[in-house]
Image 1: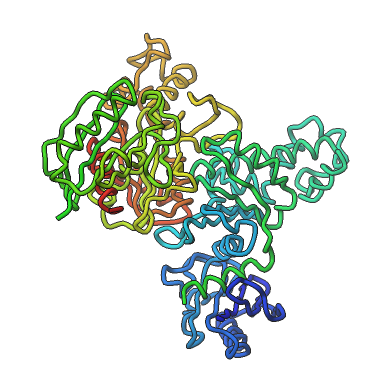
Image 2 (image 1 turned 60 degrees about the vertical axis):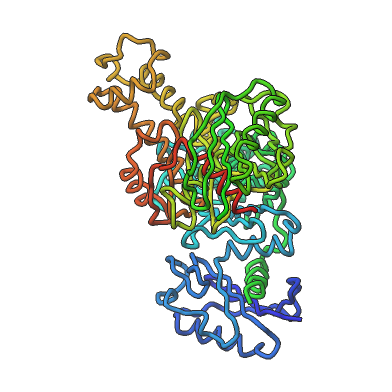
Length: 305
Length: 305
């Protein structure tokens, strides 16, 4: 029996637990705040590892950012983590195997091994949060691309005429239409352009003040404006997902992230299978959610022992 | 030394030759018309194989359509090939190993093993012809997806508002903007909307009569209308390629197909590297071209011996 320590390094907190080869969490899940300097992060990780040292065979770390091809360092910018974070060589934290992987890749791996995508061959995950992230597992491996940056699906363009600026500075990124931020953008557009706004429960708000929860709640209450905005948002999500289905020919799409509970997976599945040139994909909501990074990182560390 | 017979089954002709493990063609390249019935295609292939039987260790077939996961049959519709084609079990054509693969996958394999993409780890091919096809090689394997249908990149949507109908019946497929047909669509749009048309060398043509060659020739001659139409077409091609770069993080993109000679690979490379969130991709034009299917199929047959 081999066990791994799974550690999820987030912008605000570090989450960790020991898991077995099946991805079952076999200790309490603990957390601590993410320290404000790279040096302190290193020290905190060393302390966490020493706490479980005798119970584990490997350590898996889930982190924001692109990870190098030897899975030892984070190489891209990580705005929510301190300066110097990219200089940490995680493999040197312990004499046991330390394996670091991008959080989206950890999450798709967790769903593939233990969650909604168990048993499928080609799994596409789309994480719908403030932005949109993604991951693909194909034939038992994560698709990482040439430098570990693959599946930046949030940057896929769904218009070709510079219609809407994204927070990244580029135009027409999928995530500026179909993420949580995208839903807010849909509401702003709708408040200025849909006649339903004048009789909406939000008619006295400024367009910029309408929140994503206004729309999701309003839609539940049957507010015609909220329903139209929500449907437009789902249409944009669909546009990206159907393109990705034609591109990857997945047998399973997992939708995860903070906004995924507002998506009707079954309805999305039917639309995609009707429109896509390739067929028969299942669309599911993620199951491992908050523990996805920890579970995926731990399982990947064991996989790569 | 092992050799393969590479056979490219096209809608109008069958092309074949023997190649060695490096993909060097070591016999004359021969061709014959594609027979009009599935039975005759089977017979023709058997005759071709028996002609080279003593020189070869395996047979590789390149075909239009999606191929099953055991690489023995074509399973999707193939409008340019006769009824009954999907019932042919190619593995039964010979007692030697017969391996069939989709033509786009054969082409990207040929470029990866012997052409412009030799030595790269993550290769994306975009074939710009009447439509747009694609293929990906990642870590020494073709990315086939769950059912062999992956990389239908021509169906990726580059608008999300049902702007232009594609010949496939869907809306806003990349190929309806950026293929050869797409260039014609750009010309039709331009003739109706660009003021440059009134002083263009094509001003007396009906929009629908302007050909792709009118535009590519006109652009060479400095016709302002042709230049604007051409630039719009390249913009649409860029939109799709930059999305695919963010999705696959390739280190090499190969552009192939009948329209590829009208693309400035270096200029496209610079634009993609400037715009993409992932970086440092090389953009190259295909080198194996007309022999790509034959070479790729033969090499794949040897690879899978």
